[in-house]
Image (cartoon, rainbow over all chains, first blue to last red; front, side, top):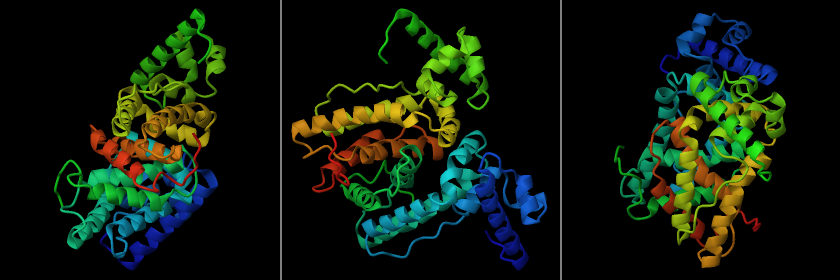
Length: 194
Length: 194
């Protein structure tokens, strides 16, 4: 997020590393901002300049930051959606897998800037991918991004966190979502925002 | 679940009512099994005969019990899926809406019998609905039930709990899932269990 001064970046890396270490050692519930500050060797003020809450700090360290990388153009809507789904699976695996449920419980009580920064970043990525499909002529317009977000993230979420299964069938789901979005008149409860 | 002795049933109702009252008063995080026992006027042993954990007790009181009612035959796969989606939305609204995130965080730490009783109940309902579609000739075989479960529950979940929006577009999603499942060769990473 803006900045880029070397010292800032060193603090960012130290915070991410400290958060991941402490998650592995104590789990999400017992992790504290104080412990992250101590482990990273930075003041708490440096953390709170970046993150309003523990849940923001952890989300940023294990899932993604405020910007979400748009996968390179894979040539078709279905292939692009598959790339997005693979990125979602990767970002929810590893240390995120055990942290996410507790983190979301905290977000539900204190959402803070969760929507503005993290969800907005994911949806900016989706908008870019959907915009490419419009450019290719695969979709008549950019569908409701909330709908696409729910269709892509939702099944992965249930698969990993409720059914507790491994390896979500992302190829199948990419084909489902791509063909669903291409159904005439089915590009969502038209919002038309792009 | 089995039983049906009047006294059992009175205890069940008292537990459900007490749990819902306490959820409304204190929220999920502060609710305790002790408080539910006291409010319901039953011993803790009566609770632990029924539920291994607080999360089981609360899930049963606000989402659904071990059996999930199969909606009446609506005449087509799409209409049946829409009925299931509406039941999912109803069961995740109301008191469940604020309880679920904390509850799932507890389940992730101590899953207990969550999968065996609650997920199994949901999937038995799905199997019945998918079996009807096979009988009608709409599907060649019952698709992987985990996949259908993820496709139906996932988007509702993200819509309500992550995007925090109201009124999920269930008509659209029922049509998406029905048409996806009907795509040739796309009935899931064939498990063929029925």
